[in-house]
Length: 430
Image 1: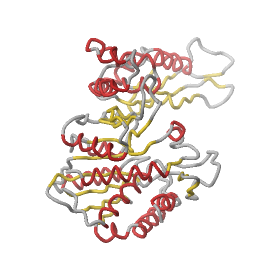
Image 2 (image 1 turned 90 degrees about the horizontal axis):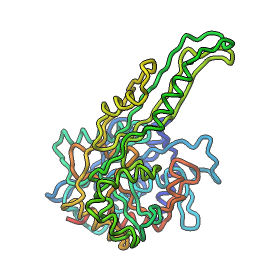
Image 3 (image 1 turned 180 degrees about the horizontal axis):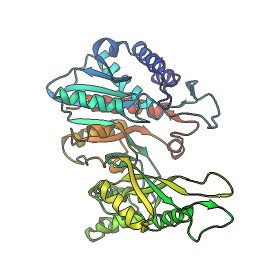
Image 4 (image 1 turned 135 degrees about the vertical axis):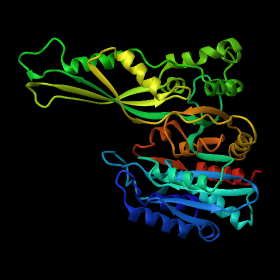
């Protein structure tokens, strides 16, 4: 069986974390053991928590390497797939199914790399810890437990790689050629609830300011006054890395030292993905009010999803939201959340090791640092290592990127094979 067939076989196991099924995780573990006999026999296997796996390949005296992927996938309910999302199909050079890209593709690429190196009798420079969380999509408790376990054992990693950016082309205007986009940090995530209250009563006698009206005014102010955009060190590093690939009119402008402080605010004006790189974002995800068509709502609530940029503090973000709302009758409450991760180094031996591995798989791709706007299991290692990199070693199209968590998720077989080359190079490079 090929690597693509192996991926299809793992995709066929529906490990949906929103509806935990220990039997599905057990079946996945059994299938991994079946497909990768050398990994099964040569590595130390540990079950952690309620389904996470820690596989340790003992090596030389160098600092350990942590290679991460998660076993769980998001649901497929209410999505229009062109075929069974858990059929595990390989069709015309593409693996199709839920989890092919997020994140069983990386899981398979890691296992294939280790299996092939074991077959060649390779000893890694240092220990290799394969950390496979089981609930990244809902909580990340599995990876958190693995990080704590390694910390307690004094196994301080010199390099951590988890999902994040990828090899992309044509996603940034004015930039030529393929880019290997590597996350040096990831945003914090928080939930904030806004609550407006009023007396309620019969809808035939509406007040001048209703609870939903107050809430709507608060939400409008938040959209009109987003959190400030800044040129963080990561944004500045991203611009510097992109300079060789910029079209000629943009190259000298971005390279000018005087322009660098303006890059973040400029991205903020662009908005969308570009704006999210440069600021803490506030998104309204849920709004509710009222109990009947003819009854005034005594309470109206909105839920905000906050993505905290590195350099911002969650408490300051919440206070800025409170000042922007500017209404003492609208309560602003932090429900839960965590800060942005520490920023990893975009230079030095660990970074150069990443660059060399990228070159082995994608010689034409330019490594570019960025801030990951989503959350990943890598955040649990960010305080133990200053070289935590968020990168999926796959060349993916804009359509494939859009299909993550959506219908017809897929991964090209050629990209999977390149990802295996990436992990082989990463493991064997001193």
